[in-house]
Length: 117
Image 1: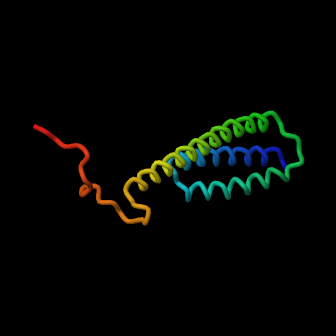
Image 2: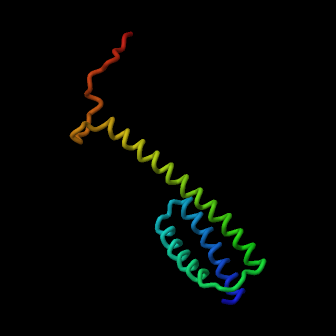
Image 3: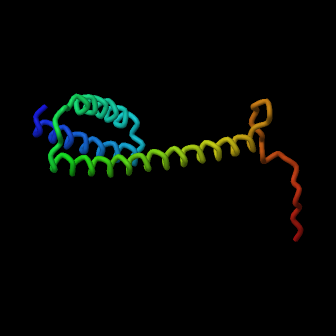
């Protein structure tokens, strides 16, 4: 594999990582899926490389590592936030539905606190 081809492939991978970052920030699952497919294809191509990497390629690899680490952090943080949102939603649902799944009418419940003038 030619070194310039390897460098161009690495640049494409780095650009995909930027698109992945934007997709993660915008919760664009369709874009994220497309990026993942392209990333997999590029990584397969890079895996076929048998030539030594020059300094320019090694610098690009370091940039890719940095961007990949950032995207991994975004993904982990996003999943954590999503988990908290789901838990919060389940608690809210538990407070507004009875065990049989019927909606509770909160306004008709007896008042515990009475107001005095």
